[in-house]
Picture 1 (cartoon, helix red, strand yellow):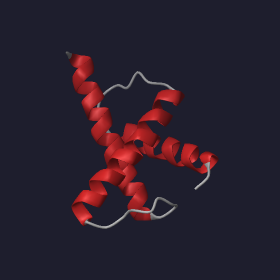
Picture 2 (cartoon, one colour):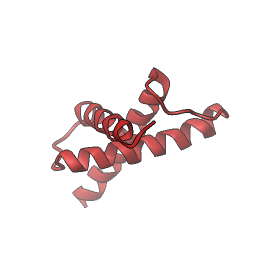
Picture 3 (cartoon, one colour):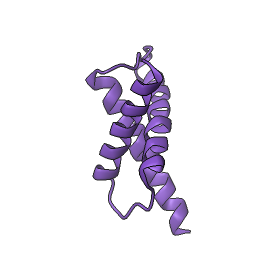
Picture 4 (cartoon, helix red, strand yellow):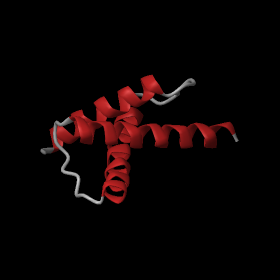
Length: 84
């Protein structure tokens, strides 16, 4: 996937994660992008550990759901740290 593809993939995953995660999020577009890309990496690592299979990121449903799940976990962790 190209750099532009990663940016778009991360932005979509971050936006879906923000929509699914409860609470108010004070991050902007760049923060959403960062959460999406880092969540995609986190979701890929967790997916490889759980499914014991190498995850190839592309425009498929399984990698997208793993990216969204990773972004949701990251957003929940950021919200927990923000409340402290």
